[in-house]
Length: 316
Image (cartoon, rainbow, N blue to C red; front, side, top):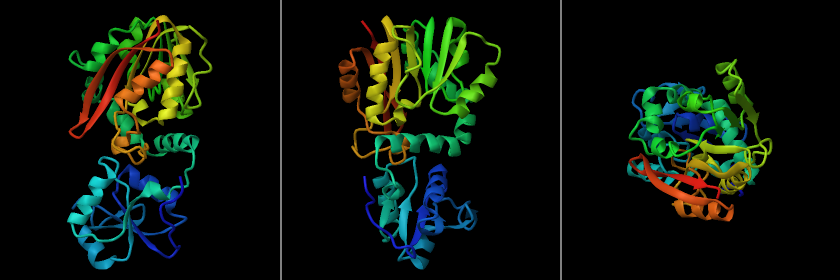
C-alpha cells in the first residue's frame, strides 16, 4: 500500500498523541519528515516535552501551526473518532493516520511492524499484564476464557505468542509437555530464565506465521490469548492450517482473535487497541477451510466500544 500523501521535507508535521504509538511514529518518521511537535489532550503533558519535542494543546495547534500536517498516533480509539474529536476542538489542519506514511507494502512488512513495535514499546504492557486484574480477565472462574480453556486437554499444549509466560503458571501443573512459541527471541529468552529448571517446557522462536518445528499430530491442545487479535488475517489462516497439522485427532484449540470488521484496511498499528481486520464469521470460515470444527464461539467485550472473539476449535 502506497503513501496517501507525499510530504515535502520542509512541511511541518505534528504527531497527535504521546503514547506508545507516538514514540513508534516518531522513530520511524523523524528522518523523513519535519516533526516539529507532539499534540495531546492531557493538561499534565502540555507544556512539557516528549522525544525531545514540545507537547502542544489543541489551541496552540490552531493558533501557531495552522499549516502543519497532523498525524494521529493514538492507538486506543479508531482514527475517525480521533479525527472527529480534533475537528470538534477546532483543528482544521489536514489530518491523517501516521501509518499512511509508513513504507509498508506486504503482509510480511506488517508482521515485522507488529514485532518491532513489541520489541521497542511494550515494556509497560508486559509489566501490567502480570497484575492480578489483568490475569483475572482470562483466569477468574467467571471468565469465558477460563470456561472454554477448561475444555482443553492440556497434556501436551502449545501456547502461541506466549510473551513473557504470564499464563504458564495457570496450567503448568496440568501439563506433561508445554511448548512456548513466540516471534520474539527476547520473549523466549525471558521465559527460559523465568522457568529455568522446568524440564517439561520447550521453547521455540518462530517466523510469525507457522509452527514448522512442531511435529504432525503431536499435541493435544494449542491456545493463544491477547496476541492473535493483532495478526494479519492471512497469518491467522496459516496458523489455523498449522493448528490442524499439529493437533492429535480429537485435539482442540482456543483462540482469542479480533472481531474488528469495521475497516478492511485496519492493521495492528491503525486498528483500535491494535485490533487487525477480522470477524467472527471470517475466522469460522478460515477454520472450516483448514479442516477444523468450530465447537463454540463467544463474543467478549474488551472495552466499551470493542468486542473480540473467542473461538474453540476441534480436529476431528
